[in-house]
Image (cartoon, rainbow, N blue to C red):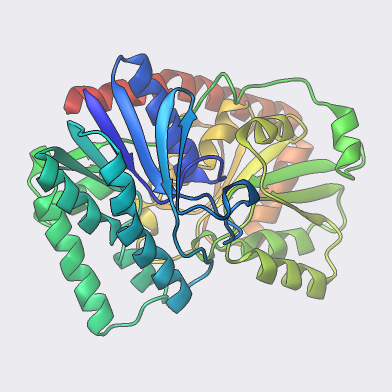
Length: 401
């Protein structure tokens, strides 16, 4: 089969959608399918087009044998009118990239942004291809719940667009069973249209490995410190303030939190850290997956956080999976499907969202009981190898198609 992936975000950018789509494409190729990609000139998370791509409206390249069509869009970060222009510009310019691509059997549209579904629908209809609308986040419900969009005309139009896209798509793919049930029961989408495509993990890249103490020293982390790693987007939905609050309760320990990544909240978090005088929190720029895998070798645990809001029960943070694959215990500050995953796998400690005291206590427990920490890490790796290898996840999804 021929697949065409339409996504605003793709490698060499860093982030969960980029890593997930790359892994999915590799598995589709391994299964003998053909794949093309239409995406934006890379700009995330800095909100600036990468230097090697500046000055282009359209750029064609090969990525691991896959033809990637890149088009210009208005690069921006954060919320508000600039982000709206960011989404709308790619919705329009993506049409040029799609015109350059070959006719697919399946047009896979990554959402958010929701607007991209309009472009996908128009070309799927033109090609008489089947449209797969991938729901990575329940937008606009999520932005409404987070207080990023108020009730009004804009929200009502977004909700109507969401419902229209669900009707027009041949298939809607979701990350969790909770979202699948919500779309079927609350949104009245026929069950046969809603397919499960959960996050998976590359256990060959993310694996237990010896700690590189020289690299640790180059990062400015003394050998006597216990390192806790947060690797991923620093966004509002992640509620990362809980990490800073926990760090303030652990100043009497040798624990250091290393926060690697970028996003709309990073600058504010750095300011909060400076205002609080926290010396046990370090920030670093986004790193490619292979570097993140090496960083986990230096840690006693990894951390994933989700803010406390009404839709949290549908969230399963993808950050937990590389931690598990690297054989490290997960400190999961959140609820819902993500918390249930960690509990079922016996792969870490679940803390209520926003509970900084609970998070600090969980860190102390891991530091004081290294045997239990090792056991939790071992449980996590065994679980993902059995259930969440990308080869298993994608093969199951293709069978559903």
